[in-house]
Length: 293
Image 1 (cartoon, rainbow, N blue to C red):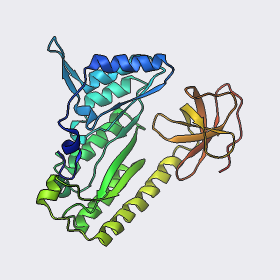
Image 2: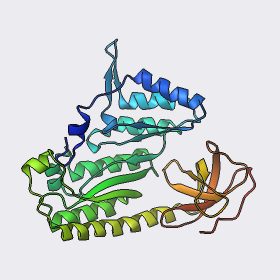
Image 3: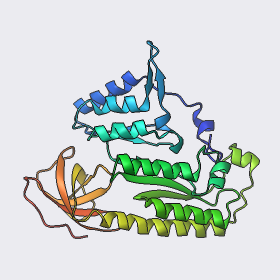
Image 4: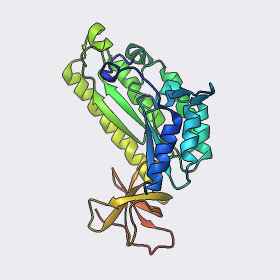
């Protein structure tokens, strides 16, 4: 029930599915040739199901069950809520190579006072503690986030706290928005949308500019490394190039022959653009030149 969020009013109360139906569905699509599945929930790691034997199925146990279907099945999940991201989830991720090492962890603001007005149920310090846990248990795990600029009552100092948190975490990528009032939400009913539009725009632009720097730094750090890439299909450019994704959800473009969607290939990153990693196959397939963009 975040103050700005209309989802509970349009989707209804949160509920969890029977874990066996989820595992069965994932197993079926794997048998049909799919090689990646995403466990999707508004606050996915608050998942909880009590079975007929009164055994509680938590999100870590569900995640482990789906990952155990087959090592060739990549498993992702979204979206985590910082208040519910437990060390147990991180430990399950560390034990299964096929659980993608990427966590989308929306922060929304780097200011504890703004987070309280947003009804986010955590503080800046708690969030940074979860980041520390990710880095400790899953070194190298990619971290992405959501950020809202100009929420009700946001001061310049609170905005600067968001920028400083972004620098401290070093997000790999982010979804960034200006606050926009939604009908019937707590914010619409009880708070004044009092940050001027031009100020919201300026703050959002500062957030975007900083994230562009952080994303570029993240991608440059991957140059020279080799990643297992799950092939998705043809790249938009250049002609004949193939694209896929790393476990950290980064797009990789490379030249190759006779590779098909759903195959795994090892790709060494040769260089990076602001949005894409460019590389060459490093396994027993014939290596190709780095594509030009």
